Structure formats: structure tokens, C-alpha cells
Amino acid sequence: MVVLGLFGYAVGVGVVGWIMIRTGMRKLPEGYMGWSVASGIAWLFITVVIALVLVAVQGVQMSVMGALTIPFVAGFLLQTLLGAMSYILPSTMGGGPATVRASLAAINRGGVYRVTVLNLCITLFALPAGILPSWVRAMVSIVGAVAFAAFIPLMISSAKISVAGRRRLIAQRAASQSPDADTADAAAGSVALGMPGTAGDRPPLAHPRWMRPRQSVDPVPRLLSLATWSASPSPCVKSWRVYSRSCSQWARVSPWRRNRRGSA
Image (tube, rainbow, N blue to C red; front, side):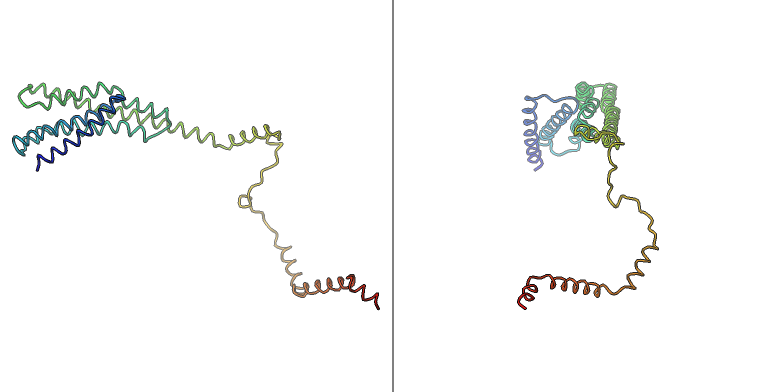
């Protein structure tokens, strides 16, 4: 069952690798991000194939897993992770197209050299024990660690570029939306339409009621008007008087009334 599982895994990784090869034939990978991810997929395929052969010949043993730890962890996991982060971090931090390009260039600096050194170190360190002297393996491990650690200062440099670009973009947007810029734009539009363009020639803007300052109201006139209204007849009586007066005036001037008087 283990052999069948490894075989299916190898077929899946092979399909992914073939798709990546076809894509790379159309356009080569760019910088550290592309070559690192491609190297990680290649190491994954190599690790799975070697594990398949060793398990089929020797069976499942801890020695087989120990021999494949460095190719799997350093070759596949770390290279794929760092390659993906080399593209994701500058792209997500933003700051405008120019800032993203500059940030990508900073984090992918020396990409081909770094990928080449890393894969050579992984290949030499993954060789069976006894082929290389111990001091050579120690030097190879140090060089590989330095190549991996170079990602950290480059990431910091890329982040600084992205942060500076974002601050510059925010400052530009704030300047374009400031009241002075709005006043200048309004003045330019007024001049283009033949209207007075200076602040002294323009009438004051009418602010909404909720933006106007509250004015103090003297309560004495309101109290006097309320007392006058309470002393006068009720509104219903006033309305009835107005209605009766209107009806009497209409009756005096109506044609029916005049005709009736003439017949009499």
C-alpha cells in the first residue's frame, strides 16, 4: 500500500512538473521567486521517486526517512515557501505599480545565484555519509544556511520600499483631497465657466442646516405671541367666521342672486 501511495504521489507531482516545464518553455522564470519554486517542485519529485525505490527494495525503514529529510525539508519546503513569499509579500503590501516593481526587484536580488548555491549545497549535503569529508559537509551546511538567511535582510529592504511607497501614495491622496486643492479646482472651474474665480467675488456657500451654528432665541416675543393667541377666540371660531364672511360675499355678487333681483 505504501508503494502504491508513493507511486500515485509521484504521478501527481510529475503532472504538476510537466505543466511547469511547458509554462517555463514559453516564458522562463524570473528572479528568485520563480526559480526557487521550480527547484522546490523538482526536489519534491526527486524525493518521492527515491522514496518509492527505497521502500520497494528495502521496505519502510527509519534510515530511508532520515536520508530523505534534507532533500524534502530544505529542497522542497523551504525553497517553495521562500519563493512564494518573495512574490506574495511585495504584491500584498502594495504602494502602486512602481513601488511593487521596486519591491520585487529588491527581494529577488541575486536570485539565480542564490538558487544555484542552495541547490548545490543541498545536493552535496544529501549525499550518503562517507563520500565527503566531515569538514566539507560542515562548510556546505554553513554556505547553505547563509544562502537561506539572505532572504531576511532582502525581505526587510523590500518591506521598507513598500512602506515608503504607501506613505508617499497616502500623502498624495491627502494632498489631492485637501480643502486648498478643492478651492483651487473650484476656482479653475469657475474661471472656465466665466464665473468669478476669486474667493471675494464668489457668494458664500450655503451650508446644510445641521452644519449651521445654533443662534440664541429670545423667549419674550414667543411668550407674548402665545399669550395673545390664548386671549383670542379659538381657531375653530376664527375659521368659521372667515368661511361665513366668504359665503355672504359670494352670495352678494353671484349671478343667480342678480337674476333673482331682476325678475323681482
